[in-house]
Length: 640
Image (tube, rainbow, N blue to C red; front, side, top):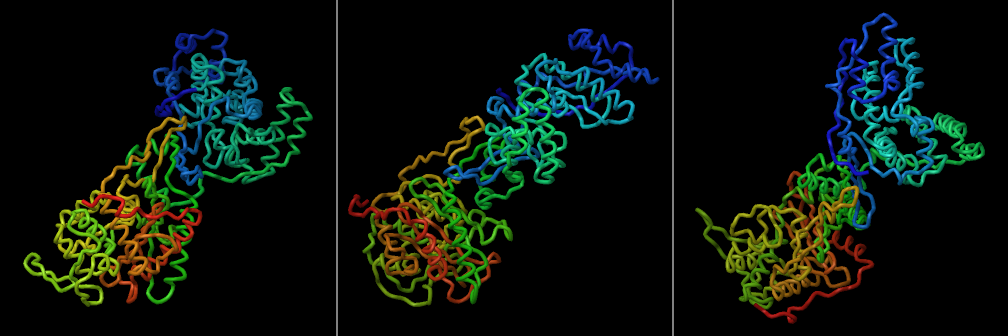
């Protein structure tokens, strides 16, 4: 049954006195006088008690034809790239809608047996049941017995206010009769089973089945179905999660009722009572398996689709995350924080982002050491200075200009530049100078002065252009010290940019979302990679070759993993931020370590000593089943 979204409106019934009730109802509903007799039982009985007769103002009743375009709010689900459930999103109702033919026949019969056994025989109301319930309630002075059919229950749940009054019962009857004129019985039963509340914030048969028995509603046994049917009248109190014996008692009553109706045999009823039941768990309030991931995904979804669609639209979100790599990233970060940074200089926080260079799909993202203590996602929300990890953008610009090669000589000598009203004199880490040296060696040893000189030679605006081409969107000012990382960038931006180096200049926008569909499988968003060659292949291969040397004989020897890899360390003044961003052709990973209050971590805290070992530990395990691949050589391409 196809539905479209409408707003559920609950309208309280308005009553007024008048003797033309029966004629008015009959004209509006086009029903027979015999059927109308049931509708007017309430007014007649009340009149017998000496009260004024009642008449209903049908102008205030909702139009049940709107249900032709109705779809219940549905839970949205977030999965990893291989289909592992990471999280579920819902507003007030946790629900997954299914077709009637996808529901176990056992459950359909069990529900009908206890809620409305004459469902397929009446026209929306059960006159005998309503009359019996009305008289009992009238004599008691309050509601002590129900007489609602499944059609009436659906009307009550969708349209009417929850007040318990004779007026609401009249409205249920009127609207139920009208509903049965418009919809087939199977359509009404499907709407009911997808709408009914089953306790623990689970709405609809499919979500309840997954929660109570960890299986789809199509696979429910007679024993399981009869227990679920027995919960409808008081789902929280009778829940097997709360009171298993009460749930078993209700199950027995349902089975006895089914046997009495001859829908099952006594032997089948007895066998179902004896069948052991394996319960699931409450699923509505389970926390995310990867909270830093799902929160970032939700933010992206909200920006693209809006809150209504995300929380109520039944989306199926396939993320790019590999839960195995994600769990490994979390374990590596927490282990490093606990063991490596547990004494001496304390690193308050760590962020890690892993991206597949071939697709620019984000495979893992850790925004902090412990999500429970801090939900701030440093991987995507925190802009920190990358220090020397910014230098590859400068050297790529140099190689792409056609004026430099890795063997070009650059002077590591004192230099001063006019800077506004004063002068700027860059300094190396440690304050020394090493004279003339090849660019390759200057980058391996992370010398600052050569990077500043190269930046001035190619132009700071060109360096910014390269960074923008690589997907960096954070603000960048064209200052002389930019080649030394005097700009705030996120780990996500750094990992995405380096991933393009790893893919030899082919770039796609990094994303956490691979695909979004609705609950019927219609594609709402498709992020299939569409890579573009944005960098010069020779210049990229030359840069990769130089950055391999950073691990082999430079500042990142602590990052060696026994296979060809490239990367760059970064350490800012006073050791406030330390980085290592490195890659192989199959995976690019950025690691940042620092304090949230931007305080120094202490002497000896560098990208090579703090971030590089953490990167090594992660990559050694993440690449365990990946074949060794080499980077393409500069000699394979034409130099610009």
